[in-house]
Length: 366
Ligand code: M6R
Image (cartoon, rainbow, N blue to C red; front, side, top):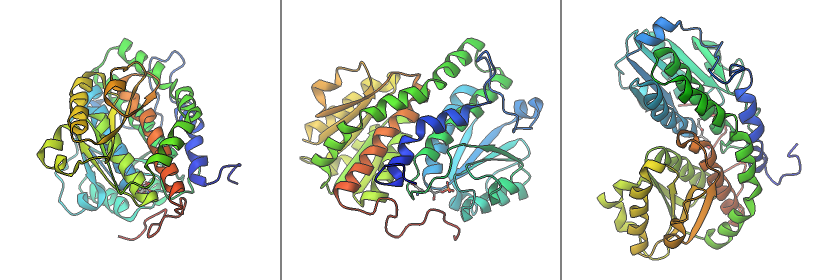
């Protein structure tokens, strides 16, 4: 059932092109001008009057929510708050009927996320669930459900569920933006066109997996790894860091690159691997100067950027490239090398990749 792959995680990483395609299927108008979300039965008037969106989830799903915040705010111009479900449920969130609550959960059974959903409904907000499991508790209790079609995810570490959750975030953001008139038809078309090409671009990245295997051989024994990035790259850095901790047991931390100077830079010393994400064009120069900052402390930098950013090769020790795409969509591609890096590091260290210690696939207790 592993289809010739050594672990479920590796198989699921490789299933992402198919999963991305399936999650888009039937949700785009024939001429690529619009998103069609039959599942979201909230009328347009209601979507126009929304004053706030909350996204709540745990772990990797929370990281998908962070990308969702950025993308919905940027495209649909609605304020979005993202909260960890175990915090949201106890903090008396300020919710009214002009708030939409989006819960994200691969399994649809996470206890804290389910409790957050119930709390949101109790407070009178409509709840939209993004989940991968049909008829799960969260799917049943939400007002609206948008399914991701990742297929069963067996490995404890979430991979294809995350990238399909990102697709769900883009679909929601594009739909809201259309209804609220915050982006032009041309802008929408341009993003949708790129969205449809993510599967083949993901395929290209997977084809270069051997580069990451080589890196894992060099850095697999590291004790600490830092991940830095700005904007959407920061959200992806958090996910890359969680993946690494979860399956390789290496201590990893993710920081907004501009925040390093405010404390963390003290930890950067000779040879510490720093994975620096620099996929966002408008932030590239800023991230580049943060990379120079850590290089000046003799860190080893593995940079991740879109093809064409040759400048990085002069500064970083290694550069991994993703195919060019619209910067808002970059997280879907940027996370793949990080998933592979975590996987290969865990293999080098002889860890039980699919069943990491102390963790369960579905966390149904608080
Ligand atoms: O099933 P859920 O999406 O609600 O699960 C949430 C988290 O437990 C999950 O994403 C966890 O963080 C993963 N093991 C990370 O790889």
